[in-house]
Length: 122
Image 1 (cartoon, rainbow, N blue to C red):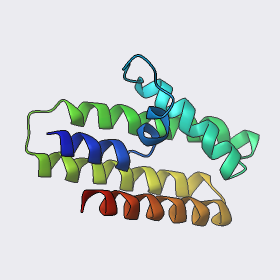
Image 2: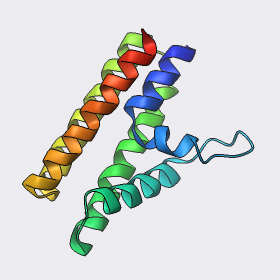
Image 3: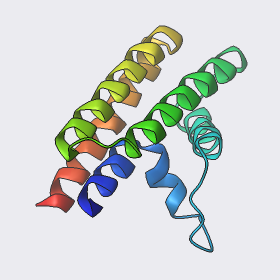
Image 4: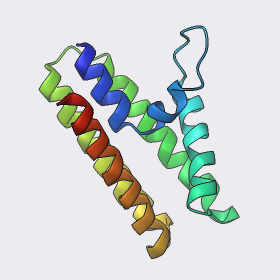
């Protein structure tokens, strides 16, 4: 179960960044994680004003879905597959909002994170 939580956390990208700043063992809410990630994306991807609200909405939806998956009573593999599906849908949604250059950078960062997760689990 701990490995699954680690996978969900790292694949979720938002939680990975947020956990470094959490104190008192409080788990950040989906809203907190979405806002934090949107702010990171705003800086890294140089989001335009008209993109920020859309990206925030996508990040919030994804974070909420991942929270629902984490508490489900299903196998670890089923949860992992569900999280992957959420992340894939998030990528599709972001592709519609981001420019080609921004989306390319987003996918590069996402790929590096996946590699980091694989390396940590092996």
